[in-house]
Length: 218
Image (cartoon, rainbow, N blue to C red; front, side, top):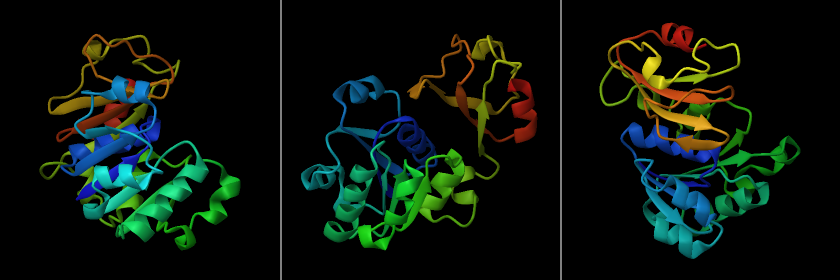
């Protein structure tokens, strides 16, 4: 699947990471040059600086051949414009848009070219699954081969892993931390990275029970 994600904030970068790890061709468009530079080389995606509200930028991102466009910026007006362009100008089969302000949810429908409205408060994995239209979790939660699943874990000040480095956590064999989201930014999961309250981890595993992994961390 060819996917374009507009907005490289917390949700956009996480969604890009999950979709790319699942083997999809992902282009991540980000308006802020500093944010784009910060993410360069840290995600397995094509990173395109630019304003996704501009048709030329969406065209450069490959909108004509895209199967999915996700408008994931922090501005509802921008997300509506991106959705409308994706559907009306580029005839993208599936368009999803993030709703930042619940009061604006009524706008996010097919009048603006949007197939799926994504509440900002929804869990990442369920959002990505809904956005891609996958009824079967195998498509997104099982990666590369059967049994590989994506697990989310949030660190609080009471978590067992709080204050420890990733290298100090005895994760089971076949389990890998693929991303750490801290203060809204996705950072490399270096073994020396010390976990803090508010950090969120994206973990791949083909051998362990998700509840068991979360128990090690939370």
